[in-house]
Image (cartoon, rainbow, N blue to C red):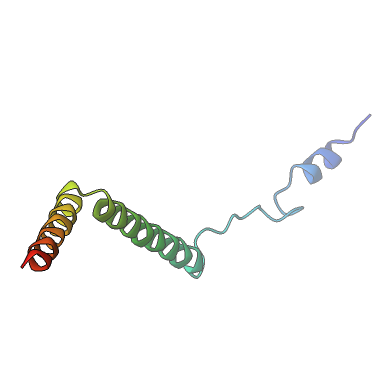
Length: 80
């Protein structure tokens, strides 16, 4: 049988130190996360603005009109 003094020793808080979970730190993880987020924002804005410029119908239409105008001017100059 177990002795009552053995039971008190096993349940005594001095037999093992309590488990302590440290939270926080030096903030390096937070800085790294902020840099990653900032890089993602810059990348997405860059991609968005590039695709917007390439697919803008007004720019394509203006370029087409300038080509037609230049071709017409060349034709008129060669006819004179």
